[in-house]
Image (tube, rainbow, N blue to C red; front, side):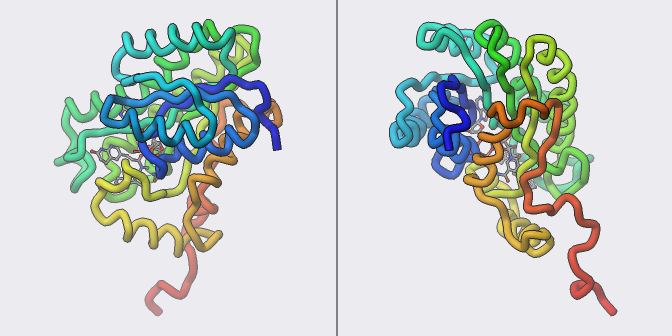
Length: 265
Ligand code: NAD
Ligand code: 0WE
C-alpha cells in the first residue's frame, strides 16, 4: 500500500534494528514516505545509517532531544532538504537506570524525575514547536509512543509511568493547539517489546511472557505491528483521529483477569 506517498516524515528514536522507530521507519518507507532519521549521538550514528540505507533514507541528522540547539539545527537542516514537513514521529524515552529498579518511593529522585520528564515528555512538545513552521498548510500528524505504565502501576516502571502520563496529557493539549493549524496529534501505547531500552530492565523476559499469556491475542506484539499502526495514524486514512491514545498491545490493557485457570481454587 502507499498510504504515505509523497509525505515528508521525520523519525526520532532509531537506535538499532530492534527499535520501535525502526519498525515504524520500515512500514512508512514501504508506504511511500520520504524519511529523514535522527540519531541521539555519534555512538549510534553508524547503526542508524545502516538501518536507513536499507530503506532508502538519504539524510541522517544528529539530535539529542534534551538540547534546544540540536533540535533547532535539526529543523534548519530539514528546511534545506524539504520545502515542508508532513509528520513527526517521536519514539524516545529515558530515565536514569537507578530510577527503574525497586520501590517507587525509594528509587525516585528530584533529578531522575526531571530527566525522565524532560527527555520522555517535554521533548515531544519541543519537537512540535520546532516543526510548526515547516508543517504549515499541510494537515500533518505528530505521533509519539507511550506505555500502559502511564495509567496502571507495574513493578519498576516507576518515574517513567509519571513521564508517560505527562506525555499522554500533552498529546491532548497539543491536539487542541495543533488542531488550529489542521494537524493531528496522537500516541500509540505499545505492548512490551525487547528493544535496547528494554534490555536494561530487570526481569524483562518474565514481563514479556506474563504479557503474552494474559493478552487476548495470546502473544506479544512486534515492531512491525506497531509500525503499521503508526503508518495508519500518520496517513490521511486517520484524518478523524486526534488526541487519541491507540493501544497496540494485543488487547492486554482491556483485561482485568486473563483466565480463571491461574487462580487458586
Ligand atoms: P530504543 O532503545 O530502541 O529507543 C529509544 C530511543 O530513545 C533510542 O533511539 C535512543 O537513542 C533515544 N533517546 C534516548 N534519550 C535520547 C535523547 N536525549 N535524545 C535523543 N534520543 C534519545 O527503545 P524502544 O523500546 O524502541 O523505545 C521507543 C519508544 O517506545 C519509547 O518512548 C518507549 O518508552 C516506547 N515504548 C517502548 C515499549 C517497549 O516495551 N519496548 C513499549 C511501549 C512504549
Ligand atoms: O518505556 C519503556 C522503556 C523505558 C526506559 C528504559 C530504560 C532502561 C535503561 C527508560 N529509560 C531507561 N534507562 C536505562 O538506563 N518501556 C515501555 C519498556 C519497559 O521498560 C520498563 C518496563 C517496560 C515495559 C522498565 C520497568 C518495567 C517495565
